[in-house]
Image 1 (spheres, rainbow, N blue to C red):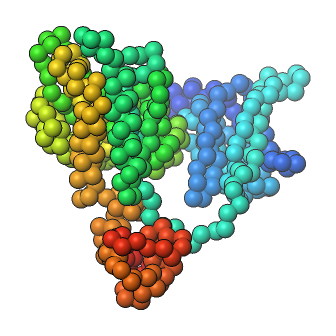
Image 2: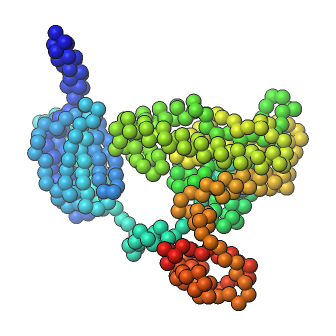
Image 3: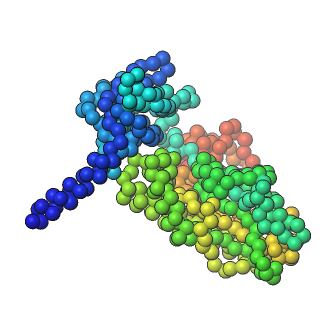
Length: 435
C-alpha cells in the first residue's frame, strides 16, 4: 500500500514537469564563420531563452525554460567551442553549456524555421572577446601590487528630485553635494584611499543606479549623504543608518528571484550557476558580513559626528533604504542634520560647517579601516609591514640594503619611479618575500 502511494506521488510530481515542456530541441550544429563561431539550436516550437557567460574556465550557458533535448547526439567542439554539455534545471528547464577555448561574447537571435515547418532556430554567435594586449603578469606580481581602498560617495537626491527643503529655501540636493564633494576631496588626499562619486553635479540618479556605480568601481564602502527633515522644526542632530534585517530579507528575495542574472554577485562570486540552496546560503553569508561591517563603520562615523555637534540618536539606526541594499559592499547612510531646523539649515549652508562634517565622516571611515583594511590594499600592507622615516643622507639603495629587500620591491611598494626622496617621507618596507 505504502509502495503504491509513493509510486503515485512520484507520478504526480512527474506529470506537471512533463506537461510544462514547451519545446523540444531537435538538433544542434556548429559552424565556423569569419569572425565568430555559430551554434544553431533547432526547436520544434517557439521558446524563450536566457544566455550568460562564466569564467575560470570560460563558458557560455544557455537556459531554455520548459524544454528538453530530443536527441543524444551533440556536435563535437569546433572553432572557439571546446565541447558541449547539457543538463536539466528545476526538473523542467534545459541548460546547455558551451565550454570555450577562450573568452567570447555571445550574441543570440531567433529565426523562423524553414518554410513548411512550425519551429524556430536559436542562433548563438560567439565572438572572441577583445582583450587589451598586455604582458601576462604572474600571480606574484599581481599580489605584490596593492590597490587603493575605494569609497563610493553618494550625494543624495539630485536633478528633478530636490530632496528636503529648509525654511530659507535651502535644498537638500545642493548641500549634500557640497559635503560629498569635500568628503571625496579629503578621501583622495588620504594615502591608499580613493573616492568615486555617484554624481558630481545636479543630476537625477535612480537609487539602484547608485549601487551599480559602486559595484562597477568595486567599492569597499558606500557612503550616502543626506540632510533629514521633520514636521517639528525643533528636532535636530545627525544620524547614521545601516540596512535593517527586514530590508536585507526583501533584497535577498529580490536577488533570488533574479537568479538567472549572472550580474548578481556576492563578493565577486556569480550566483547564476549555483543551485537555489547554495545561492541562498551565499547571499545570506554575504549580507550578514556586509551588515556587520556597515554597523562598525557607522558606529565609528557617528562617534566622530557627536564630537562636532548634536546627534539625533546616540546609536546606529536601521532602515530599509534602497541605497543600503548591496549584499557585498558595506553601506551607510549619513543624515548630516535636520534641514527643517532653522539653526541646522543655517549651518548646512556654511562651507566651513560642510567641511567639518566631511572631516568627521572621513575620521570615522579612517578609524574603521585602520583596524579592518581590505586584503590587497595599501592600508592592509601598511598595517602588517614596517615603515622607514627618510632622514638626510638616505638613498633608496641604502634603505633597501638596510632592510634586506630589493630596490625593485621597495620602489613598487611605495609607487616610486625614480630615485628622489624627501626628508620626513615615510616609506613602506615590503616583506622580504615580496622582493
